Amino acid sequence: MFEQSLTCAFLMWIKKLLLSYNESAIYALIMKAAALVKGAFERSLTRNYIIGTTKFQSKYSTSVFYHIISSFISWFLSLSERVYAFFARKSGGGITNAAYNLVHSSGYFRFEYILAAFFVLMMIVPGPMWNNAYAVIGAVLLCGLYYLVRLSGRDFGTDFKALPVSLVAFVVAIAGGVLITPVRSDGIRIALFFVSAILFAILIWGSVRDEKTLKVFVTFMVSALFIMCLYAVYQNFVGVPTDILLTDVNTNAGMPGRVYSTFDNPNNFAEVIVLIVPFVYAMIIASEHKFAKLFFVGVFAVCMAALAMSYSRSCYVAFAISTIIFALLYDWRLLLPLGIIALVCIPFLPHSVMNRILTIGSMEDTSNSYRIYLWEGVLKLVRHSGLTGIGIGPEAFAKAYPPFANIWAAKAPHSHMLYLELLVELGVVGVVSFLSFMFFALKKGLATFNRTGKTYRCIIIAAISAFAGISFTACAEYIWFYPRVMFVFWIVVGILLASVRCSKNSRTLN
Image (cartoon, rainbow, N blue to C red; front, side, top):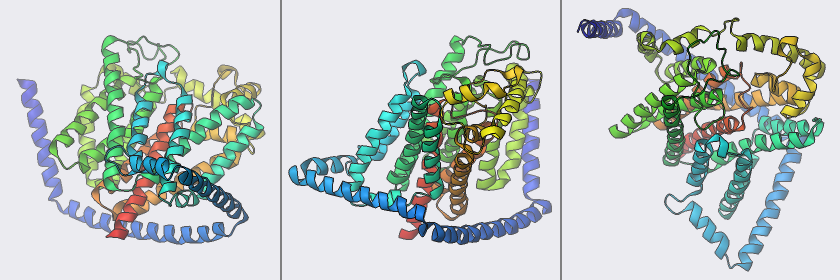
């Protein structure tokens, strides 16, 4: 009884504090200052984005590189239209028109939903049953289906001619990585995963064209995460053996086995949670029905339980970062109550989770100290071949790294950092083109989110905050080493670009 009364009194005090804060002169002054800063930021961002984009596109559209790419695309489209016309004539239009009508016009059996259903399967299939070749095959088949649908609609070419130069340069860097890799078969295998992931982003960006489809697509993704997290909670109840390769048992004494759900690794599983949980926030806000809101609140609770059970320290921090960025972009006034809620929740965290958080950055933990020794060797490798890279694939890294390795990190499958790994494998062109493309995508989102409807706004903010969170994890993990995480990463890229375009189209129509 005493504890209950104390808790009630504490909550009442917080409520009074928030009410008094909202009515205070300090709050009014902060709001005015924030409005001025926010307005100046938005005007500056929009102006710089429009001017910078216009100048760059003007130079890019007259370059030799653009001429070559545009000529190839035009030739391919011209050839495709001739092939399509030939088969349409031979079949009397029956086969091609039937396919178009089936996946474009008929209820829920549309290309966008087929695409989303494939992504759900890709996420929920258990690790022992999954093969990354399925994603490559799926990407090829989905591209063929999309190609048929869009070509039938006579607007296929506009999707690919609008690709940013940074993304094209990144694909070129991947091709270059295959050419210079010492193990060509492994390089081709990894390159296929890269290209498949990028194709997923392009397919989403090209096919999702209205608010309803976008919400359904995001709901598919959130539902897949919900299934994964439910399975992770089940794993925790039945028990997971402790893997000494993933956990320092000396600094994490008493910590149970880490859940990994349908993935092979608890860190990979936690990275997917970080990428998709912001969309749960978006659906809670954007959903119109109370039942839907309650469902997504329940999804969030299960996801938080699964994230805690993964014991992924970098993803704990990444989740906090993504939540702060979401609140800051949606309504910065949410930061105070969120901070208070976080403080209130600390005493209720399990001891194993709290101990795991306290070991963040501790050099007594072998996984932390191992990374420092590893990066020392990798930086030596970068100084030796960072300009061109060593070639794509883990086997290329396994051959190039040992001569530069620190004795305390003599064996490593990768560099434990996304940006460093891209620099090592693909050289300067690879890492610069990737960062440029991400800047391009995020800048588009930041320039759009505050000038659109609630659904688009929430989903764009969710994508931006997801990238903010996972970018932190990418500083301590090579998040693409497990291809399914890379696929989810690029799916989020596709959702962001599709949201921006749908938002602009809706404003144009209005």
